[in-house]
Amino acid sequence: MSEEVEGTRTLNEQQEMEDKVISPEKAEEAKLKARYPNLAPKHGGSDFLRKRLQQKGQKYFDSGDYNMAKAKMKNKQLPSAPTEKTEITGDHIPTPQDLPQRKTSIVTSKLAG
Amino acid sequence: MAGPGGGSSDVQWCFSQVKGAIDDDVAEADIISTVEFNHTGELLATGDKGGRVVIFQQEPESKNQPQCRGEYNVYSTFQSHEPEFDYLKSLEIEEKINKIRWLPQKNAAQFLLSTNDKTIKLWKISERDKRPEGYNLKEEDGRYRDPNTVTALRVPIFRPMDLMVEASPRRVFANAHTYHINSIAVNSDYETYLSADDLRINLWHLEITDRSFNIVDIKPANMEELTEVITAAEFHPNQCNTFVYSSSKGTIRMCDMRASALCDKHAKMFEEPEDPNNRSFFSEIISSISDVKFSHSGRYMMTRDYLSVKIWDLNMETRPVETYQVHEYLRSKLCSLYENDCIFDKFECCWNGNDSVVMTGSYNNFFRMFDRGYRQDVTLEASRENSKPRSVLKPRKVSTGGKRKKDEISVDSLDFNKKILHTAWHPLDNIIAVATTNNLYIFQEKLN
Image 1: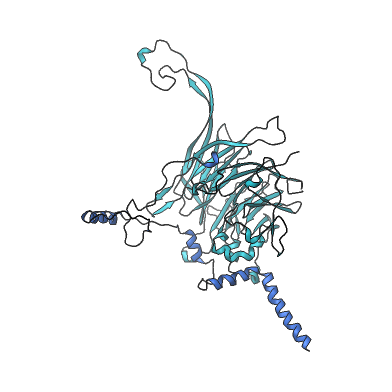
Image 2 (image 1 turned 180 degrees about the vertical axis):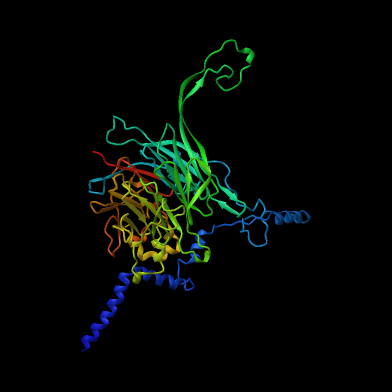
């Protein structure tokens, strides 16, 4: 009789092992859930796709705000240019100096070298 | 050692050339984003993230060295696309070349289509090897002569000059895509072509730039209901009314343009049924098709998803006829591949000239070939370590079990930053172009 019980236990363990072996994906999923418990349960939903369609790095520019800020700054002392480029967020109105430089010169591809 | 090949299992691959900078510090502009042979294989075009196109031309075979086919040397290079700014949406438009497609040659000049996220351009590449000399009113350097000094008249004649290859934009097809263009495909009628973005496919005429027809629109009325996007599209190689498009959900829809103007209803849908027991968080992501390519014969099509390459018979929609595992050992690494975004990498695939072998890239600068007839596959590496001229490439192996044999590399040692996303196969010969991040490798079949 004890042999039967042992047999069943071994079968359960074997089932668990088989699950892991059959589906490494599920094991990986469990790992992900452990690391990020707040991750949305159903991936591939519209959130994911909308993020994919959304462009990254949207830069908002309002010429009205920009000109008003420029006018305001004329009356105040001009702040010295920041030594390190901090990220532009919130109420800060970007000036041309703040924006990252886009390359202007055309450099030949190294494949053609 | 035997390897896959066209019709024979004895093809060995040799290093031929490598193009690009040697240093490891890769400038973003130098990242290769597309590779494409033209219809004869004489020309090989690459596009990069900096919006530049470089075209290589194969040297004619020399009688002195019948052992190797001609080398590819730079033929022309030009800036195809520039970075732009969409003021209305406050968005930058990248100059990265997403795709290049050659037009078949009709006259002395060569034509290709290149596209970034928003704009497609038709480029004419022409040779100039003569120039007129002996003008009456101009000096040879171009300065104008004082007409009073002209005492005799002569007829200008054409004299040979050093070959100059010029690229000029002949058409600009703009403002037709709200979302990012992922594919362009030339129709077999050689008059029209399609461009596909995440949600729509447009049909253009090569001569007409101010309008295009929308032939597929999968944008839902309510964006909250969006469940899938278009990932790739291609025209059938000889049926000008047929095209296919793949989706992020792993389906391929075939459409017939004769059926209706708007091809939202597919003629055929190819989808492999999924085992619901095996479904996981990653299932849909890894089923997303990153590339679809018809066979040259037009009988089959190949799709690439994250872990495999599938060959479909166009007459059977229910499941692929062949499935090849590219790097199945990554299935137990999906968690970290999701964290480092590698799970979203878009690998391309290609057929050889007679559709007997297919090729696709992987990580660690490995690429894989699957011989359909001989049921053999091989893993090769594009690296400067194997770059002695005409040295035969040694097959590589990734060890998955506990015990790693000599010369094998373990899964954890793979470099996931070294990805081969773009490969191309010469349409006629066993010559392949493999792009690593910023280098282009050309390998040739060993000829005895």
